[in-house]
Each structure stands twice: as C-alpha cells, then as structure tokens.
Length: 228
Ligand SMILES: *Cc1c(COP(=O)(O)O)cnc(C)c1O
Image 1 (cartoon, rainbow, N blue to C red):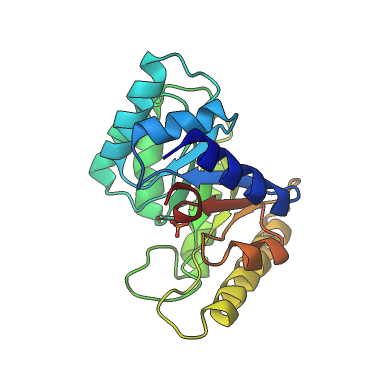
Image 2: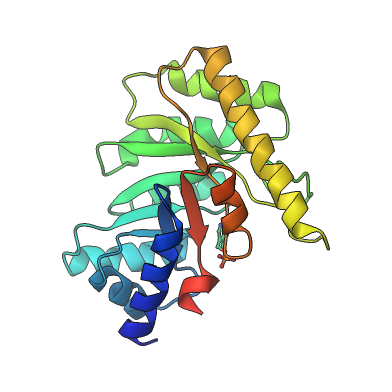
C-alpha cells in the first residue's frame, strides 16, 4: 500500500472516533504496511495469531520503534500464552475468554516482559458457537474475582470485549444488541464488584464500528477498512 493511502484512511477514521481509541488490526498486512502506519503516528496495532504477532513485534523491536502498543485480539490456546507474553511491547490482551486461560496467564506471569498488561475479558454476546468468549456470567465473575485477588500482579483488569454477530441478514440490529449487552454487563460488574473505575469496552470492527461508537465503545478494532 502507499503511505498516503494509509494516512488518509487513518485520519478519516480518527475523525469519526471522538474519544475512542483505534486499534488498527494488522493481521492481513505485511510488516511494511504496519511500519507505514506507524510513520503516520499511529501506534496501536492488533493481531490475532501469536506467530504473526511475534514476527511483527520482533521487527519493531529490532528497529527501535518504541512507541508501538501491541494488542492481542485472537483466541488463544493455553500452550501459546508463554510465547505471547514474550512479545515486546505487548500492551493489552482483548481476548481472555475462559477461566482456564486466565489461570494460565497467572501461572506464566514471570514470562511477561513489560511492567503492566491490560486484560479485557471477552464475552460471547452473539452466542454463535464458532465465537469464543464467556457464556456464563458466573464464570466471568469468578475469573474477574480471581484477577482482582492478585492486586500485586502485572495484569490489570481493564475491560470487556465482544464481537457482533456476523452471519445474519440483520447484522446492524444484531450488532447493536450485542454492544448494548456488553455495556450492560460492564456496568453491572462495576456495581457488583464495587469497582472504583469504569471497565473499558472493546467492540466494533470494520463493518460495525459506527454502531459500536454510538453505543459508547472505548476501543474499536479495525482491519480491512484500513489495510485493504
Ligand atoms: C480481524 C479482527 C478484527 C478486525 O476485523 P475487520 O473486519 O478487518 O475490521 C477485529 N477484532 C477481531 C477479534 C478480529 O479477529
């Protein structure tokens, strides 16, 4: 891609965002295109496979691109957690989708290279079977309580993530329902747990980010609308 093209897409997207943060999902992109976006002063990038993330983080690290903040957004096998934690400049994981996965993160904490890692818990609001995420509010509550019971941990409870329904004719209506659900779950958890901070919301992709913005998201994760 041309730098001017990436620059144009980023700046027109950013005008729509208000206070929300853009995670540019680079999973379809070459590291060269990600570097072009970085040179346009965009620093937040998302990947959904550990191997792809590792290649890009290694390249960024070797080239001393220090401002980058990497976001992991994909489903994780527990045996990949260690490799993920060893990626340089990993800033957040949006896809903690089971208690078992969180337990693995806690067990592997010494592998993490940074000082703080922000965790989003993924909720399966669309209830599509191919999507991961917590289905039961009891398990979600248990997982969050487990994290909160480790206050000295480098992992910080940061927010909730979800994906809108894709396989549907009425995707807009369905996405809106999913995003409203996530918002409601977040506000409920804050109250139930007596949190002194608000849980951030990570929702909205290329096809439905405008709906997510209207529903008050804090992060959108956009790939194809930038890099394709
Ligand atoms: C790929 C992906 C995105 C971005 O999808 P686009 O449709 O390309 O914007 C966002 N979130 C997750 C979890 C993804 O896997």
